[in-house]
Amino acid sequence: MPTPRIFDFDTERLADYNEHRMNRALIEQPQLIVNHLHIAKALDGWATRMEENATEAGSDEQFDKGYAKALREVSAHLRQCDYLPGGAMIEESEDDGPPPLAFGV
Image 1 (cartoon, rainbow, N blue to C red):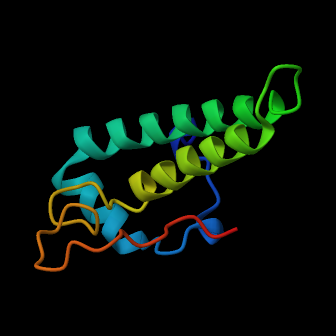
Image 2: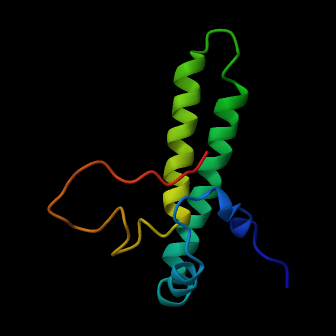
């Protein structure tokens, strides 16, 4: 059986990917994680288009590159299950500091 395209991503480029966590999410919350993977794929496509268009006339290249990086960061968090209940981005803690980086460059 072919693997759906939503699973076509490089786990080596993710800072905190955990196969066990992904497998557990697929069993316990399959609709939610599949939705997150679809969103991550769409965000990656958006980021790619932003990067490709960054040098067009009238474009602010630094802004576009920064925006694309932010899109990829959210995409990485989605693929790491960080936005699932109990995930790194959802955990309630007393320290409301900045979230951890997820996309290794």
